[in-house]
Image (cartoon, rainbow, N blue to C red; front, side, top):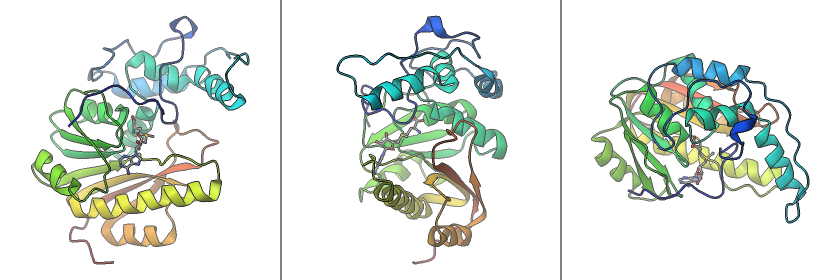
Length: 271
Ligand SMILES: C[S@@+](CC[C@H](N)C(=O)[O-])C[C@H]1O[C@@H](n2cnc3c(N)ncnc32)[C@H](O)[C@@H]1O
């Protein structure tokens, strides 16, 4: 288990850039910087984030910055979810995606056992800790994750042979929810990136089947048209209900989608 500094290669929308003076209306209330946000107002936080409309901030091309870096910064500064995440103490704007999926499907429940694959910088783990009081939450990431109250983290590759045993030991049994927001490093080549993310998700699905308790659920990031046929067939075979979801916090221009599968039938079939 590790407890180190947040990653440098921030995932889509990781927070930290917006100056406090540019906030405009403030959704929710300020929270402890590294702790788990308080339990009240959780659904209101998300609604407030969606209604926040900051003034457009323009970023001048600075020496040493590439055009892509300037575009990234400008997008961050003008993204209401980034601002709301920073104000509310979420580690990532991705936290809102899980909040929204939980609002819709009631995935997080008190006392449950949760595995968070691709946990850094910890936004989803914070959401799980907030929405599922008393839950056992274990995150896995190649990168170190700052401590989150109510969660523990393993630094490593989820495909490591020892990972299922490590997780079951920390959870004291099988998981009720396996969630994967994992994303590989992108190459900029759409075909290659698509293959990489789908490969990661397919491995996450196999992994989930080994460590999920009957009745459990699986959430995973997929891309483009959603889970491809083979993966969809596997999901439908193993889970009672399979949905594709585009949470409002997922950027419209992004090809990202999530698959939300519930009612794990248990006993994975060999494939
Ligand atoms: C988009 S970020 C996750 C953001 C997180 N859900 C949050 O809200 O803070 C994707 C993460 O997946 C991790 N990742 C990618 N491949 C992985 C692997 N094979 N094993 C573990 N983590 C992996 C990356 O290191 C990265 O931190």
